[in-house]
Length: 240
Length: 241
Image (cartoon, rainbow over all chains, first blue to last red; front, side):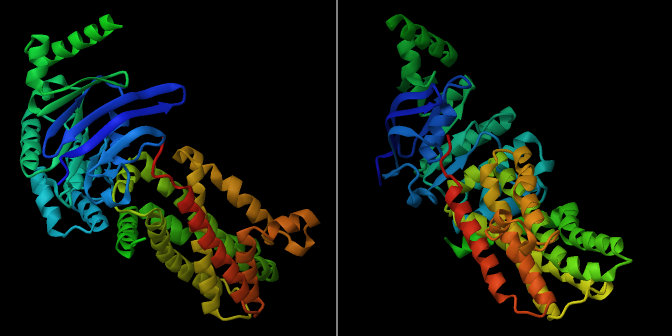
């Protein structure tokens, strides 16, 4: 088993004139839950797309599960959830999952497992476009859990979910990590940070911090992640 | 390319279509309705209908299939499902062939309906066999599908995709021999018409109508179908900016 599920070195992406990512380097330890935090527009989604192999014009190196990002052999080993739920609205939850399972070559029984994992049993036969926003994003998450991927990359999976569901999903993430799955979860909600093993704080395409939540809070001398984030931004500005 | 994945895409597209009664009605009933309209227009000159009726069996199915498929893949792009599929073991050709397969099945039903109505209800007079006309109509529908899938690579939105129809299909409609036999076109336009796929689709139907073998023209149509799908796969991008 590879010690680091993901390894990024000087990853940069330029879109038009704008540098969306400017030299980001970090590692994701196998079996950990890492939070990717930062304000909207700071480059989180671009970084995630570079890791799953959908981003064009990436410089630097992105290595995923021992292969370069986007390599064909990774395609059955990564689960990816986009920010907007990417499932077919005119199919039911189960029809969607059966299709993605067939693409992956996963067993039909896997569909039942992931429906229960995201707690959608009671809505399994409902068309996705008739579900609430939260239910739809859980359907999208269920599809990413098919085939038991080794790396799960989730772009804002808890947006629009009520507190109980959010807690349940974070419990699911930690159960998966305990089984050896590596998770990268982006969020712009700072209070989710304390639930992660490790945090990556981003701003303007740069990595401000890469540490455990506890170490980060201790270094800044606060018990509030939002405050820690602001202090780090101020220190960075002073250092310039 | 993996047959399992191709068939999964085809099955999924068909279950989506099953829910969408209006699109299915459009695909299956519309060509027959349009041919009937033409028959009615020429009610007082049945020989004219015998001349244009055949080519219409090639033109209407391919245009209608083109419109539907050129938008279908754009829907996948805007819903984010295409991004998800490209992180999965999904070949670009699997994706396009899955769509082509699903719409080929629709084309078979479409051809059965439109050819039956043309021959048995509207008394279209042809020298060749009815089944030959059916085969030609199916292949022409698949041609529209393949061209639509290829063209959709050049549109960024569904709004742009519908604009492709007048750009791609109407010039072919004008030059394919339906309005004026191709050998009466000015030299340059005749040369242009010989590289347009719809010309061969119409030539195949005219061949059947005159009792000649349509095999040569059908092979050209089949080559255009394969080329459109191959180019479509080549222009589809896994990584985007």
